[in-house]
Image (cartoon, rainbow, N blue to C red; front, side, top):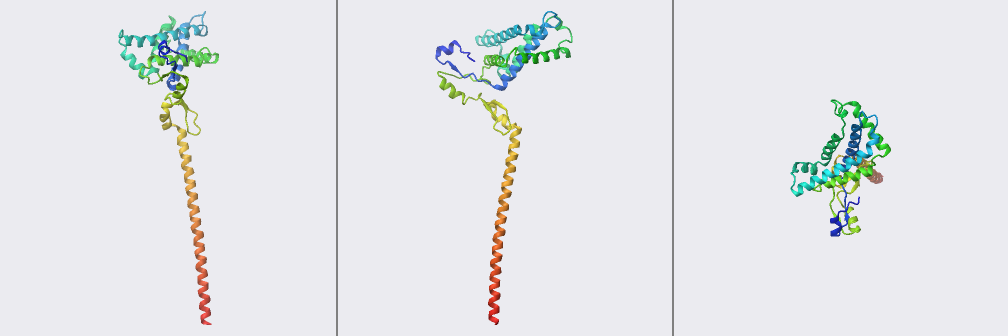
Length: 269
């Protein structure tokens, strides 16, 4: 992602962190794919000369342009005071996935042809199945590859995340400082440390994941079991040592008793 702005270049801070909340970006990439599939299906419904596949590339370019423009305009107009978008900005900065879903809905509505507006069509099982099938086809044919969708999602997220709650805005003068920052950035990708768990997420969510990770409970149970076994082993060894000491004491007492008996017999004689 080399989205360097002219301002970055002018102030000498050309190296931007650009790390984002992976969970939010993943949700947004899924929305983008579904949005493209829906718009492509709806715009070609009943058209014998066009198919969803034949228009998907063009629709993708339109949708990206629409979303970039809407998010950039929203922020610019709010900053300039030209329009009051406070409600939208609040939603965008606190629930970015939901906000993106609204924008995609607006775009999809603009792509529906006359037949798509027929009563009951939008909720029909046939339409939903076509969308589902086309999503699978796009993934198989890489019509909109994951890396491209991820880059688009991150651009949109940076546009609307004014509070920097879901992306890192830090920038640096050289690569070494950027690398040092990224190694500690709260949005860096980390893996769960519990044995058997393959989950990865932004570091900011580590405690949240750790508190609900099912593998942590298993790990704790195993540790508890291991502690119980060790404790039991120590107890057994302690008891064995006591028994051996008792046996030695008994033998010592037996020896003393025999000695006394011998002395008693010698005295009688």
